[in-house]
Amino acid sequence: MRFLCRSTILTCLFPLALLGCENSEIPVHPTTAPVTYREADEVKASLTYLASDQLEGRGLETQGIYKAADFIATQFRADGLTTLPGLNGYFQTFPIKLEKRSTAATAPSTNEAVASEEKSFSNIVACLPGAGKHRDEFVVVGAHYDHLGRGEYGTLAHHSRQIHNGADDNGSGTAAILELAEELSRQGDLDRSVVFVAFVGEERGLLGSAYFVSHPPVPLDKIVAMVNLDMVGRVRDNVLYVGGNGTAKDFDRVVIDADRASPLIVRNAGVEVGGRGGIGPSDHMSFALKHIPVIFFWSGMHADYHRPTDKADKINFVGIAEVVDFTQSVIEQLASMPREQYVDSYDHSMGAANSLKVRLGILPDYNSDPTIAGVRVAGTLADSPAAKAGVLDNDLIVGIDSDKVASLGDYMTVLAKHKPGDVVKIVVQRDKQNVELPATLGGPKS
Image (cartoon, rainbow, N blue to C red; front, side, top):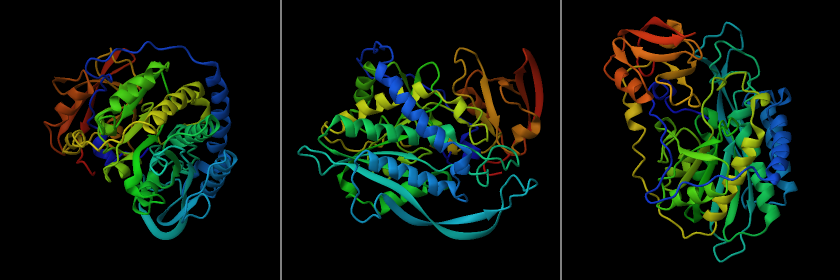
């Protein structure tokens, strides 16, 4: 996942709200089905390879990105999925200009570019043809398969040049769409066709999905919906976050109907990933900008995000398999329900975050206990005011100067009072004691 304007957004987030519709019943959640454990084993096999050192973090500077592309195409071929016109088999190839960066251990954390070169990369695209009267319409199911390589671009591990395996980000989503392709091709025909896309270049700015919608291998006006899976490998307490569910009138109903048959507990994603709107920091946004309704699934943030510690041994494989089952139900509904128009009512939801004039640079832990007042820190951005002040992973921010911070909403409200250069006192709970840390707030792009 690539957070838009990360230095701004990650400092000012809203709490997550429970998903709900008016007059809807709370689903009674069943237990995990036996078939899910078989799916979990298959997901584990795919993800373990994608997140192995052999693939070098699937960075655009590595040969591992091409190995990952070949692996995905091989899986699509094994499932009997068809290719689309105008592509080179399953490969939609296009150029990306890379900024070559220093690999020295003392390289600046800003990853300052020293040169550039253009290389070719590919989205991997496959189709499961529909068999009904709407077979010329499409549901796109996507996940990005690139990551950070050895931290040449976007690492949050200060000066690290270790392999960033990207098991959760986004080996998990890639393995999930591979399993979805297998399950849907095994089950039989749907009314609409389903296009599976493994996007490249997401970490560099949604490049693969932007190219796909500007050079669509199927008519763009025939795409009825897009489903995006990004970082679905850390399901905790059976919670799955959903975004984009406000981009079509009946998407809440689709999600709730899928939830009735799932052990997962679904909650609305927060504003930092677009909330109920389509404008968020992953590939679904490219489709939302074309007014195609989107649904986005995410298992939440964690301290290993964009660090070498995002490894396969921390993945909840049964959790991913549950997400696969849940998403399959959503896709089946999207493939048969009446087509819906795009709703943009929630697309302004990231504006408040982008309007903040100051930066602290923490990475909140969305999976922390919501009953504990404060903002739990999953990590800090490299050379950010928080990092320089000594804020540590797992600190609980409970105050800024004399203002109490009981929630992410409080945190954003307090920061909105300040301007760049202000020196504030960050109060954190650490080892059951309050610690005061002076910090000089930066600007949103500092």
